[in-house]
Length: 446
Image (cartoon, rainbow, N blue to C red):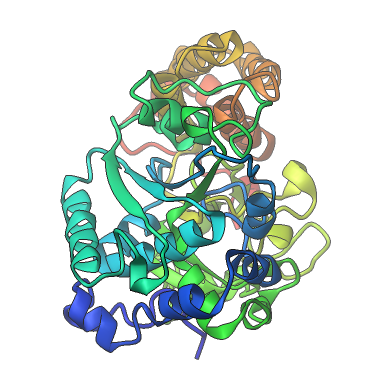
């Protein structure tokens, strides 16, 4: 049975309440950290664990903490990124509504480690009921002496604030989030300076994902080395995966990193396989912003090795034959899915969510949406396919934040692997626009 670090107690009735969470070992890690460990020792355990950012970038969390500047007389802040706006990703939502105290405990431990006396949880504004759940959990923790002044008699003080966002995808980018938290328009900042030096209110700040912070209770209770022993290579620990699409059992699953994609896709413990009577066509492994891969590259890498649910294996071969683990938004397509229609839908999203600050993204996402609309609605040309590739190249790497890359990668990879389907939309315009029409060429099916 696979180890469960985050969801071990998620099935227990009432686990969202303080009393039930406490009875099941909750806040013992906080007691251990604050009574027996220095902040530096907590940071060291995070480094030993090798836990990487679970919001999409995958940067080692302990290393990120180590970059935090500590000037005298200047406050430091911890900000939890709970914006979770990536299409196909809903695991942070699940964690916050199911086990809110796990995040609260992780926030207190992490704030203590960083020397922050005021920390924030920035939650996507549409999730108002989740915000209410978190605020209730904070009130319970405060009433029991685990938040506020002189926590557990240690002399350490912490105020924890839940801040609703405005529902902008761009605010998932950490500097845009900080701008929004300060009450300004959520435009990404130029870097450097990085948030670790000048972040919230121009003070040293760490921004971490919900899942990343929630791991800290287990890491403190069991040790960083024990966490690092789970997983594979530099992909340590477990990962929450949001599985959706044409599978029998969509949902949120906690896996040990290193599990094979084939087992995750087809075992009854996880996705349960492709829906009956259908077969796999393509996979988006890490949310809508990562490259799509065709069926023959889902279970095996280009070198014929088993494809694993890990940062390294999913990206094996680069974008020519690989993808990214990203935020773990695992979207499965069977042969009934139209790749052109899906790519157009993604492009509509990125055009709408671009902040407009960078011209390659502002103009390029609009061009891609328009050209894909032409192809999907029977007005495209063969030249349009190459135009899309060219526009994607001109966006990639030329914007302040990664939204431009996030918009370009799905388009470029869809054409790379499914060009015949795009060409079919040009050569069969009337057929392609019929309800439910989809290209059925054998070259892209497996």
